[in-house]
Length: 420
Ligand code: AMP
Image 1: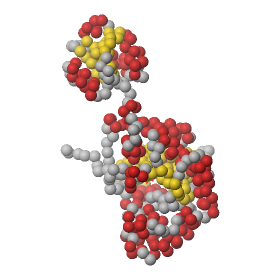
Image 2: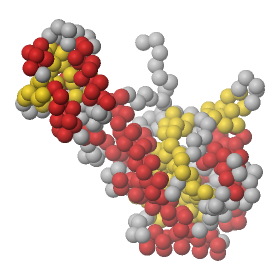
Image 3: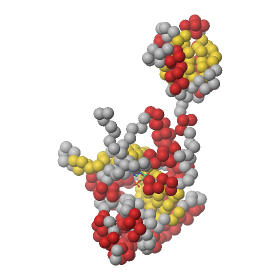
Image 4: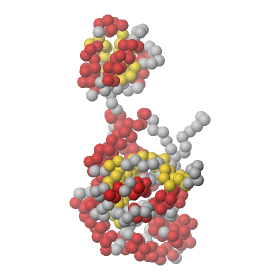
């Protein structure tokens, strides 16, 4: 084989694309219902946007970005996530002048240079929402309710919502000191990355993927216990409102998430059976991000869900994607010179919204029937010389094998009644 798709990327073939369409439809519908408007941003941005927005000391920026110099020698990066891009667009188009909050959703490919494995790719797709302009805990809960509703509509009932508060810079700086003190005596046992994190951004130690480091901070004091009054009240209110909506959650005081911009609420939807790739989606509040990206102080909250992982999770349930396929009609040509009749019948069917196809390879009738059977057609309409003379079409239902003759002029409404 001369070429293969780059490692960590994959093609979505026509036989698989219906599950994508289905999920995309759910996304559109749910976002419309919750009042989030779609935003489409470029697949690449100035590298600086992500370095600033996501954070220099995160794995995403430090190790996983696809960055390149364009022909004008500007450093560009394929977006590793979309929140920073949405913030950039919000500021660039002065959308803060619209009635607030501004609520956006997006879906599309993201790029991270990571070691590919099941559920972890270099090009993957996310569906996400971002809401700017309100610091109300009710908006955090709306985003969580939207996620829960999305998963429920896709038949994913066994997800575990884990939630924490990562506080604000005020509580974080107090907590960083506590964490540094806790780690100091055993610093030499941490990985090289964590020793650097210790100096520049100690909180990231809690997010280290090495088991050794995870073990070392296992018994570290929790950030949530060092929250300032405002962050503590915010967190209590979020939990109270979740209870009010009967949305189940688990407190996970270790949850910090892999992006630096989070403040206060941080959450993740987990499918424990997926092990280390068990996070289907996550998000939280980021009250300083808009300012970090050059705007006026503007609170924000959002989330992102990985579509590939959602598909893997749905495949483990008994959800029947095949049942979503529209029923298709095959026009079989029996006898010479049936091509014109065939094309006219196809035109008639398609103009009336019926998915249909016919033989273009000059196969025998038997060959055409075999093909129709293998390719999942529900009905075959047989056009032969005899049928033509009598003004009828022979209709064969593939599942039962039953055949009947239907008048040619009646065929479209009759077929529509059977399949739509
Ligand atoms: P994050 O932007 O890191 O908060 O990730 C949000 C969600 O995107 C995760 O919960 C995953 O479902 C998905 N995701 C993140 N990275 C990858 C990846 N490399 N491959 C596939 N899905 C991913």
